[in-house]
Length: 201
Image: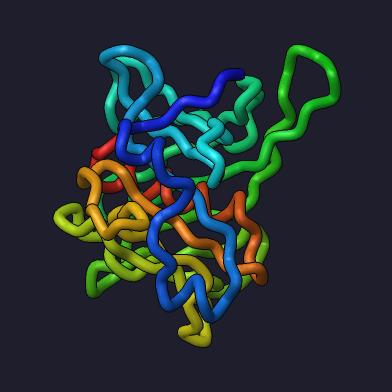
């Protein structure tokens, strides 16, 4: 697949300016473009530091759907996200998909996300007890937010993407830094769920 860049300004820079979290954790940086690769579609696209497409969500004309598929660059589903419940009981259940070479993908329940107080979301692993991660900053008006563990330590951080020259790109072009101690696919799933919560996907 050819490399695709969200904006010309982003294409000329490999990564955003290093954040303090990046400096402390030595984490992996991704660019998240809150747009679909499908014309007039809804979704998002995740890029590696060298500008190649790594993952994508394409909802076509449906925004905030009940079921969303997070795919790798080859189009294989790696996460299935389903919205369940109503009102204060609404939650998003995420399953991890495996491929055995057949037409059907096997989806194993992985974790669930629900809104919490103080503009947060709580994450609970399937079969586990209690919250294991939190998303701090689930307000739709903010581009910046963090994923923290139960001890409050930051494991991932999202911010507006900047070029190395300090130019801030559009509000739909984000820089995601993921620490080494957390599953990157889990964090990417949380980015998608937050977008669904705020109907930006």
